[in-house]
Image (cartoon, rainbow, N blue to C red; front, top):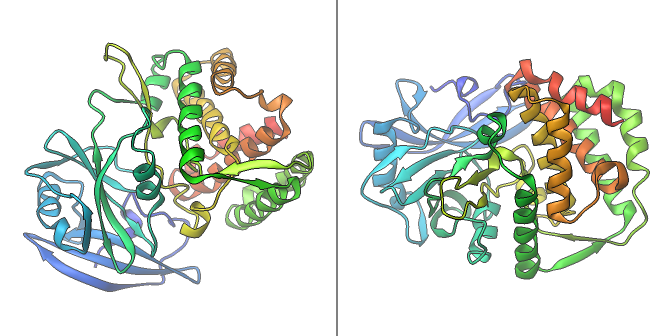
Length: 364
């Protein structure tokens, strides 16, 4: 049996695995495709894997080819999915992406939940937006999304790599791209109104979950809740958003005649249940995520506080909002994102947990 705790995409590394059961399986050439029901901490999550010698092999050359040849037979195909050749993209995170025929990206969703994946749902409705990659097709099984095929952004370079190397360019363009995507989502799905108390209740509830998952947050809890209390009464416009936006969820076509930012991976925060990730939220949550990512880029790239301040200023000007110091809603979502990062780092990269903890200290 595969040891999921050793796999990059497994998202609950801070808890021991109680049991693993094979919910579904089928041979794929020299590999075995499986859906695994993983029990941990009183919950059960389903993961999609491609097993060889008790390790996952989907992100290998042979595994990629085997998955491409069989993916259309795993469930119901919507649109078009498939191709002649596939190779791993190499950016293994919470999902695994394969480059197909040098024209498409085939994404295998690792944690599988019943319901349409937001990545498919959102991108299918805003295909004409100039800052996203269009969806070609997707595969579902028993109502859960297994995989999605979409346009390859040719020449797209990872936004975080660009930033840490000092090559991001003017962040005002990134802020403007986020605004265009938000406007497209609002037009496609509509907007709703939420009161300040609604926003505070959502943030408070999320903080409850985060503090329970990361004891490091307990010393900040009171000050964070005080910050949340400053959110105005509203009403506030909410809508469908990206939900987990950071520099690593962007690509920039640096070498193009007209360089452009693209937003990718619209799945939302991997740790949240699907129902929560599909719910309308305040668009400043995405802006806050990007602000925090600029903080990470400063820390990892050793770029200096001035770089971070000027980049954040350009980002919010491009988007059309105020700085966190002047906008209590944005400030609240920046802190919320940093608290989420503490939990994520504790689960995946314990050596990095001081980065969001230091940010929270400065924010509250």
